[in-house]
Image 1 (cartoon, rainbow, N blue to C red):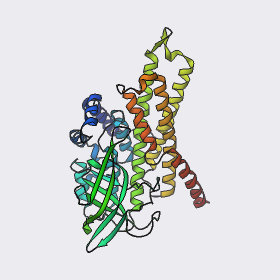
Image 2 (image 1 turned 90 degrees about the vertical axis):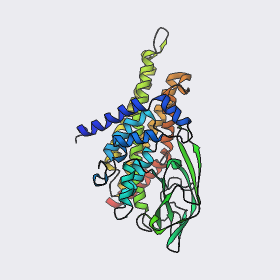
Image 3 (image 1 turned 180 degrees about the vertical axis):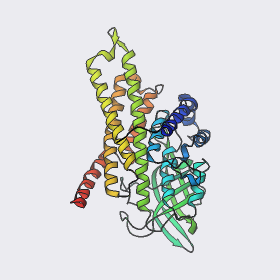
Image 4 (image 1 turned 120 degrees about the vertical axis):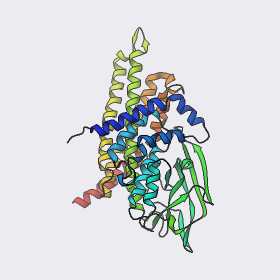
Length: 385
């Protein structure tokens, strides 16, 4: 199997690397984090001009018509800059989710605007009691006249404050945990009854608690079928998980490179501390974690859009376990090898460490995916028996 990237893919990666090095430096990011919105519209427009926001949009709608492998390259290339903009939430998860609804009349207009950077959409699906279970949707929708009314609470919705439109999952029938009965609605940010409580997360980004109090929506707000939205949501989340794994690999590599450079230059007892065998062993273990993560990230990118749900989710959970363990190990080792200065705000390393911790906890933490992998392995084994 050929694992080399095409010339076009390499150009995409190099273009993004140049952008983040030149237009998204450490001090620039620091100013963005401290700003009121917590993200930069200018940077978002810059990403749109590069075509990054159009990677997952079909060519017929003004996009690049690429897929998970190109998304992997984009996420890896942008990872060390720690972009505060909703690249994963909008340009990957929400874009893929809208793209899934081929028969919806609003699809083309939304995707064209999202590719151009004119529309930011964010999926609001997770709930406090879900604990990683995608089918747990307690938010309720009911028909009122020709439209719908929604009540519920979505938790830790990343970049919700930056969104022009929220894609809200709500249950029209059944009970939390049922696969059927879930619908998806487009809820504009200015809709009466929609309340956002924003807060910063450990990695400097913004999330929000999203509360819906008798939110009235027209019938056109429904995206796709009334009760079969969950499979499309799960596919979009798996593509997002693969992109998150790719971002982790980019951060892991930057962390290891910086730590090894420090070991070469930090002097103790008249020689670089990198000459001490115990520290060499720790650096070697870090490198092994990075290479294992790189392989699993590529596997996740190749399988994340498969139509067969159980084997796909099995691979995604395996990738998240390996990469989640690497995030914690490499992050902790890098900080320890830098000593006390490893946690200072002045070093980019400390911010990478915080983002690695956030990645380990996102889209289901390591323990959750370890359990899910075991359950799915049994299911797949029964299907193939």
